Image (cartoon, rainbow, N blue to C red):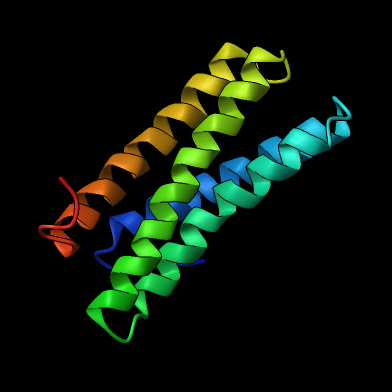
Length: 122
């Protein structure tokens, strides 16, 4: 995928998805872990898919709904990363990098969400 002009959120979410895909391949091939890694793959790649959908939204409400889903998926991704680390499938180094990248996206998404849903989120 080519870089999207002036869209760092789309770029960051795409790069995270690539990292998640690579971790998934490692977990399934080397560590034979299929359950938690599949959940991580689903939620981690869903962030970028929803950001892409938001960029093609037909209304402000549609945009906000897709950003909301992407935000929730980022929270879920952090959960699966923590579970994989605490069950010794991910090293602390792998975890720290992925969690940091996911947390950065979460903060960006929440900031956008607050601006698109004024008076709806405290």
